[in-house]
Amino acid sequence: MSLRDFFKPRQDNFVRLLLEQSEWASKGLEALVAYMVDANQASVDEVERCEKEADEVRRILVGELNRTFVTPMDREDIFALSRAIDDILDYAYSTVDEMMVLHLKPNLHLRRMVSLLREAADEVHLAMLRLKDHPGVATEHAQRAKALENRVERVYREALAALFEGPAEPEHIVEMLKLREIYRHLSNAADRGDEAANIISDIVVKMT
Image (cartoon, rainbow, N blue to C red; front, top):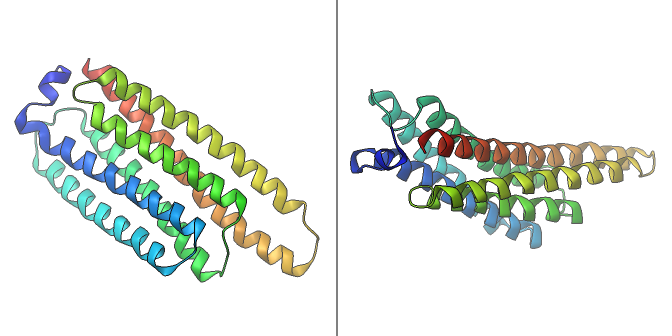
């Protein structure tokens, strides 16, 4: 099947749902950026809202996938891409939720990681927007998302190193353990962004 066949009207539903998922992920990361600037309940609520809306879209997509015998691309690719995008937002919500529960304040490392993740989520969304008419451009956006994942991982390693440079006092150790979990959530979100980018690139190769 060609890429043009993939976008026939009867096939548009899967594309629309994946695009909607990526849009919610982008909005959710935007809200997480806002939280890192000003840790307020409104930003927490917005991240949660985006996560719930994205979950609903994924439920619809999985339902459509289970009812459709012939799919416009590999069923595994549809499911895996949807799951990767969903995981990006799940980790974003876990981050802000646990920061509230653990009474952690945003720091420079968190702001840098989240800013890069927001850019990566935007690139995944742009890749989905361009997939139909400009698959080559979609691949470029996917590659940018992968490059941003590498940058998140560098900041993640810097953040961990800074944690272990602190004093060996009980208060610092408790703070270190809390922050390490939050850093890990953001690193995992970056990994899922990288996975989504790989799947998009694979789809373009298969369909062109």
